[in-house]
Length: 330
Image (cartoon, rainbow, N blue to C red; front, side):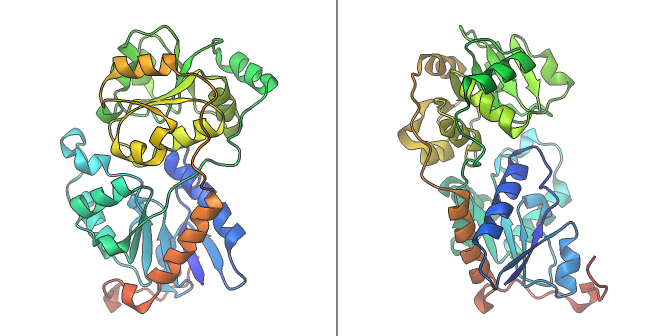
């Protein structure tokens, strides 16, 4: 099977970028002699030229309303759709994207919690939604004292601290970062991820900015605990990454996090930042191991989704001939 993979988010620093990179590598490692993955920045062109049997978009924004071949789309979470009042951008563009998701042959989600949201908020047929968990990258493992000392020096990290990992490009009420930063604590709080000027106004925090994967693994290894303050998560990839590095996790009890982590994390009520800080400061090492699931497992499951999606029963709605270009793919 020849699959066109929308590689536009591969270089992104966020979780969608990591998902795309890790899955692409694992898909190639698990492909059979008859399988081929073609990375493309112009997925519609490959489908129009019939150069691929299937298109996989690893992000919602890449979902195509009209496609000449069956499509698979990965949804990582639906927080924006569930809290429309907090997101000013939407309107026609969001409705068209949602329609494109409804037309996909299969939709991959990382947890049963997101599957339920997809059925409830996008009106997707449950049989077309497939749960494939994510996994820590192989680069996420406990680092030695030399690597830890290097990140301490590079980012000015204290001996003991709590860490939060995610994007800080714009204020997201669901992440509760402002409230988290203002919550009294004994240990310093380090925020890891790309940021904008608003984040630099947060009180009593250390901002690292964007870091490399090796640096992130060392920061996880150095931290006393990871805190997850979001009240709505699709999977919680930083949590399994932290566990893979031997770092305990304290989290607000979002449904997906409870599903993925089970007893591997200490949970508090959603929105309880004081409880979250207290739980994080009181955790003890060693941390439990992450769930026994790898990107190779995810890739093998994804190949199965591709086979199902390309079957006759999974074909999307027919596309009008006028929309099918005869120009060759680039």
